Amino acid sequence: MFDWILNLFHSLPTVMQILIGIQLIIIPLMLGVAYLTFAERKIIGYIQVRVGPNRVGPRGWLQPIADALKLLMKEVIVPSNANRFLFFSAPVLTIAPALAAWAVIPFFEGGALADVNAGLLYLLALTSLGAYGIIIAGWASNSKYALMGSLRSAAQLVSYEIAMGFALVGVLMAAGSMNVGDIVQAQSGSVYHWFLLPLLPLFFVYFISGVAETNRAPFDVAEGESEIVAGFHVEYSGMAFAVFFLAEYANMILISALTAVLFLGGWLSPFQGILPAAMFDWPVIGTLLGDGLHWFLIKTALFLFIFLWLRATFPRYRYDQIMRLGWKVLIPVTIVWLFVLGVFVAFDVGPWFA
Amino acid sequence: MTFELFLFYLFGAILLGAALAMISVRNPVHAALFLVVCFVSAAALWLMAEAEFLGLVLVLVYVGAVMVLFLFVVMMLDINIARLREGFSEYLPVGLVVAAAMATVLVLVITRYITMDAPERAGPEYANTEALGAVLYTEYVYPFEIAAVILLVAIIAAISLTMRRRPDNKRIDPARQIEVSREGRVRMVSMKSEDKARRARGAERDDDPNQE
Image: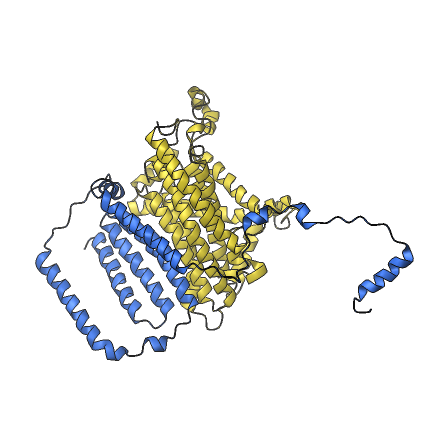
C-alpha cells in the first residue's frame, strides 16, 4: 500500500512532487497554528487556575475553527489616508518568510523539501525578512501607535538577530556544515552527542533571541497593549489581522522546530546508543523508540510549551532592558563561547569534536 | 528559451524596474522599499550564478539589517520632499551627461572586452560558501583580517562620536536595581494601639489634610 503511493509519487513530474511536498508541509503547519492558539489559551488558563475555552465543540476543541470563521466574516477596515497597497502587502510579507523557511527543515532522515547546502544561511536570511511586514504595517497604517510599535520591533529584531546569528555560527562550527540535515547527522550517537551540552550557552541565547524575534512575551513591546494599544497591527481587522496572527504562531513553531533540529538532534531518538541496538528491530516498540518524525514533533512541542510557559510567567520587559539584554548580555556570551568552541574543536574535546 | 533564462530576464527586469522606480518615486519610504526589491532580485540573480553565499548574505545583511535601519530613519524623519526636488531640472543636463558617459563605458567594456563563455555548471556537490571560506582564510587571510580591523575601528569611532551622557537621562542601573533589599525600602514601625474615639477623630482628619 505504502510503496504503491510512493511509486506513484516518484512517477509524477518534479514540479508536481515539489507542489505536493509544499502542501504536505503547509497544511499540517496551518492546522498546528490553529491548535497552538487553542493550546495556548488552555495552557495559560490552567496555569492561571482557569479552565480556558470550553464552549465550542467537545471540550472546546472546535474553538480555533470558530475563531477563524469569525475573523473571515469580519470587515477589513482600511484607515483613511493609509497606503492601500502597502497596507495589504504587510501581512503577506510577514507570513511569506515564516512559511518559506520550512523548505530546508528536515522532518526525518532525508525529509527536507530542499536539501540546500547553505541551509543555515537561508534560514537566517529569511527570518531577517520578517521585520519588513511589521515595519511596513506600522508605516502604512497611518497611525502613531502602529508606527511606534513598528519602530520598537525593528530595533528589537535587528538587535537580537546578531545574537541569533552568532549562536548559529556556533552550531555550524560544531557540525562543520551549513546543511541542516547534516547538522542533525552530526549529532547522532547518543543523547550526549546532541549539541545541547557543548553549546549550552548558545542554546539559551538562541532560544531567548528566538522568543524576541517572534515578538512574544516577555519581549512583546511591539504590541505592548498598556502603552501603544496593540502596536503595529492596531489598525488591522478581520482576515488581515488573522494573517499577522498566523504568521506569529507559524514563526513560533519555526523557532521551536529549529531549536529542536539544531540543539536537540531533530529526528534522532534519545534512546539511540543507550538501549541495545537489537531493541530497535522489535516490531512496533522499535519504531517508536527509534529515530523518526515523532521525535522531531515531540521536541518541537516541548519548546512550544516553553514559549507558552514563558508568556504565562514573566512580565513584559522594559524597552531599555530589552536592548541591554540583547547587546550587553547575549552578544558577549556568544562571542566568549565561540572562542571556547574554537578551543574545543582544535583539541578534539569530548564525544562531539573527536 | 529555457526556464532558467526566463528567470534571469525576469529578475533582471524587476531589478532594473525597481532601480528606476527607486530614483524616481516621490515618497522616500517607497524609494527605500524599491531598493529592497532591487537587493532581493540581485540576490536571486546571484543565486542563479551559483554564488549562494553572496546572494544570501546580501539578503541577510543589506535587506535584513541595513535597509531596516534605513527605513527606520526615513520613517522617523520629516523630509521636505519639495525642497529635495528643488533644482532638479537645473542639474538634469549634468546628470544626463554623467549617465551617458557611464553607460557608454559600460557598453564598450561589456561588448568589446568581455567575451566570456558561460561558465561550466559546478554541479550539486559544489559549495560556494566552502570555496569562498577556503580562499578567504588561506590566500587572502591578511587582507581579510585588516578589513575586519578597519571595520572594528569604524564601529568604535562611530560609537564614541555619537555617544554622549545626557544629564536628564533617567536610565536605571540594573545592577543597582537587583541589589535592592527589603531593608532599603521598608521601615517597620512599632506603635501602640489607639483608643476608638481618637481613631475616629484621626480618620476624619485624614480625609481632608487641609482642614487644619
